[in-house]
Length: 292
Image (tube, rainbow, N blue to C red; front, side):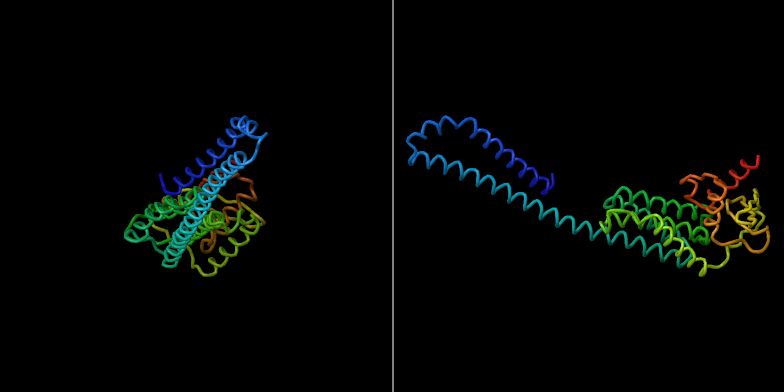
């Protein structure tokens, strides 16, 4: 049992003792007061003062214990808050470095991630842990698609990781007590859209994937807002989207897939959106179902 728990237990016991004494005095000592009340004098004063002193002592003990409990809780809260800030901020810094470098290293990021998760389990709220688990899964998926000492992160995967990291940040905001509520949906979407647009302006084209071991295995097309999108899924799961099947593949595949999902009411689930490749396959399947 921790010192704080012992202090809480002691304070609770003191309060119970105070209540028991009060009830005992009220019901058990009434005959004593009735016996001495006709004469009063010193005997009445002594009895009254004694019980008054007892109540003051016990009440003072309770208040002191309560004050100690509050102080210990406050100090613990400050330390926990500070540690949470350090862990959460480290997550953002490490992810920023990884995305800036554009690579996931077996000896760097993949070694750090398990310990980041363990730190979050130790100190983070359940919702924060769940939000980071999705970021962790997205990074693992990128690495598992082509396991090597270093794996390049494609633009679509960067966008996905950034989106999931935004959801993680929203959970951290509430857990740290910055606000009792999440950022409003429209405000959050506007912020993530601005980030996505900024990344698109800075990013290059999708990494080339055309090779004999990774041919196109599925194709589907759909018209949204007068634009014909051709969606291709490669053997290794990569998703590429073209306009009228021409030119270079479009950047921001996940955003386009969401646009198609909303326009065609495909009803993709949250699980589908955990990874761009999974979402692309789901969109292709849903479009085929609608056409059949």
